[in-house]
Image (tube, rainbow, N blue to C red):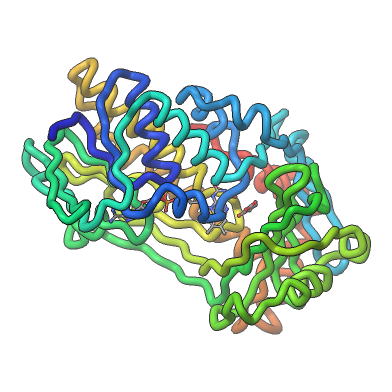
Amino acid sequence: MRTQVVIIGAGPSGLLLGQLLHKAGIANIILERQSGDYVLSRIRAGILEQVTVDLLHEAGVGQGVDAGGTVHHSIELVFSGQRHPIDVHGLTGGKVVTAYGQTEVTRDLMAARAEAGLQTVYEAAQVQPQGFEGDKPFVTYEKDGATHRIDCDFIAGCDGFHGVSRASVKDMVKEFERVYPFGWLGVLSDTPPVSPHAIVYGNSERGFSLCSMRSLTRSRYYVQCPLSDKVEDWSDARFWDELRRRLDPELAERIVTGPSIEKSIAPLRSFVAEPMRFGRLFLAGDAAHIVPPTGAKGLNLAATDVKYLAGALIERFLERSDAGIDHYSQRCLRRIWRAERFSWWLTSLMHRFPDTEGFGQKIQEAELDYLVNSRALSTSLAENYVGLPL
Ligand code: FAD
Ligand code: DHB
């Protein structure tokens, strides 16, 4: 078998890249380790920057977010039992973010791919990118008891943090990492969001909390928890009780509770692998970098990598120019490090760290006080939250 680009991974990065390349007439095949249903069952991101929404439109799948997304003009910070609105729209000269789930983005992209008749091989085992340091790359995989080989011009590693693409170049990458001493317990429920027009970020003496949404009838909430906790430790009743205790009295009173339809614990990590290009193999999205979810940047960064990669490959195939692929890594990494800084900062500001008491705690409180009373620092938060310019 032969194609122009083999894409490893059918998460948002891989599916979006496939769609953008297809629009430009570039043939591609996606190899995914899991089933399509499994990919859709992973509940993750919910907040899209305008750059990401624009890219969905460019890929021809913008109808879903237009119809089902909820535009947010502000966020709210809760600390010391009080709410502090940050007018993101006003502070950024009119920019907003949109609440629309990663599951929905993935579903829209899968539907468009199926409609265009493009090939995705789900449940592909032992996927292995090969020959990418020369000019005849290929990818092998196993399916239904047989080994298959796809020859191609380029390989896109869109296979997430635990994928095979970065593992295949492990001797050539420099890794930068910070692991945080807590996780996020997330609950999805079919209840109206407590705050339908703003995402709420809370810092209380019991730890971080977050009130988000997927639609006007579906909520997504998180609480900071110890990494040793198991999902089974958290009944729905315990979760709702804990969330209420971390918010201000009015929000706590207003929360509509209900049975959870998903509950999971995610560790928090900052991670960057450099570079992102190895001959004819490119890394994009979580395969190359992870941010703690606090700033809602992971999916948005993945989308920008894909924008740059699609542009570079289109330039190469249609204009025979290598300029885009030569600069791919450098262009992505500049934006990635700025998002890493923001996500690390917001994580440090909003969580309780087990080893920080006394001085560190007082500094955090002073910074929160400064943030909500300083137009300069509020503007910095707002402009990072909506996404720095490309
Ligand atoms: P993934 O979604 O991980 O997809 C990679 C795909 O590759 C998977 O389908 C995987 O099965 C497949 N794969 C792996 N290994 C192989 C292999 N060997 N062979 C073939 N296929 C393979 N980001 C935001 O922007 N906003 C948010 O609000 C936000 N909230 C988040 C909340 C939580 C709780 C979490 C955990 C994350 C959040 N993120 C958020 C981050 C966001 O979900 C990720 O950045 C995003 O999923 C990255 O997409 P990706 O396609 O690069 O990787
Ligand atoms: C969501 C996740 C985030 O990391 C965040 O900052 C805001 C919202 C969410 O899953 O909805």
